[in-house]
Image 1 (cartoon, rainbow, N blue to C red):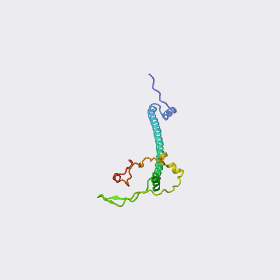
Image 2 (image 1 turned 30 degrees about the vertical axis):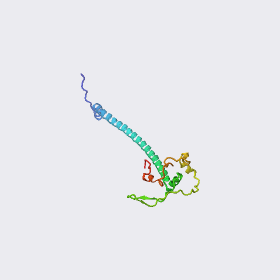
Image 3 (image 1 turned 90 degrees about the vertical axis):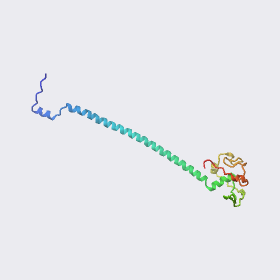
Image 4 (image 1 turned 30 degrees about the horizontal axis):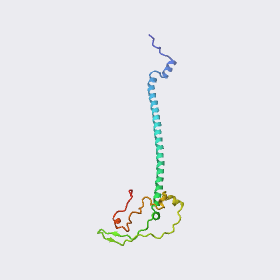
Length: 181
């Protein structure tokens, strides 16, 4: 067997006391250092993934905001178009283009079936010279070339239908309505 180490004396003993031993303390630190490095690495990777997900969500949000802005602009343009077409002078002009005339004096039916008022037939006023349409008005007109000709555009009353002002049977039937209103 080997002999035990002789105790150190003097200066060597003092140096041995100042220097830590490299045995079990180094081995106990290694798992702790690895654990800290793994935790820091995992935290950095998690932070990177979270940042990527937030950036992707930010891009999606900006895309949706852009789409919302475009759709809002389109909705406002359509609303302006509806408003311009439903103004009284525009409605009157389109009705005259379809051959409609202002109605006469109305009559009302009482609940007991009696007629109140004196109905009169609507008559067409003499044609007035209409101003020449501007290019923007002709562009907004119907794309149907027969709309200004003798053919009736869709949605108008055909010529074969009886006139409600002269036919008493036509007064009892309700007026036709469009399906969306």
